[in-house]
Length: 204
Image (cartoon, rainbow, N blue to C red; front, side, top):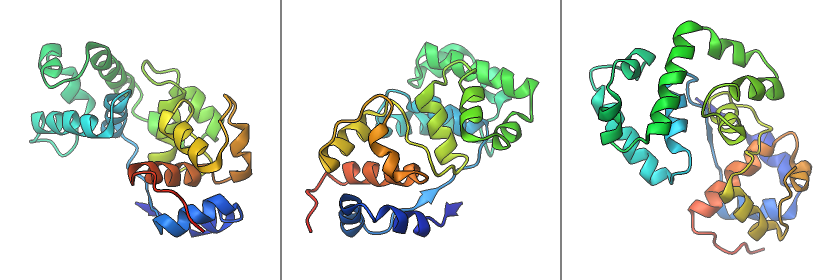
């Protein structure tokens, strides 16, 4: 599902640097994925890996369960650890995936419950799960729940991109991006896109 972010973009364009980002990159979309078990294990796989490598591993995992429409908790629980290790998933991440599978089986309403919480409470609940820290919880809020005011903590690409674009180093509390509230998610998406496109110098 694609969210209409035109109001957010217009709001952020009050910042001259962001305006140049929009001029260079054009429209950027926010595609909100379904919040389910499969989307969360994809986030687990992506941790500390490049998108390219993570996508290769995830595609191998999908092939293992090609007869199923989605990867369910039962799929992972019934699969031998060594078979998952052979396709490139670390033992630590396999443990996280199996732990999450049990949590979802024991509480099928877990994702519905998250959706009914505000941003901070949702982050707190997600971070109670093994393998889900601040970065992962923010990614879930942004890409699986469509929350518009999320700026993922600890994301090295965002830190690098923000410093190059705005000539400011981000502090731990991200106080420098308060100007983008309540649309920090959209700022993050544009920075990621700019880095992916080769960090071309912004011009007036």
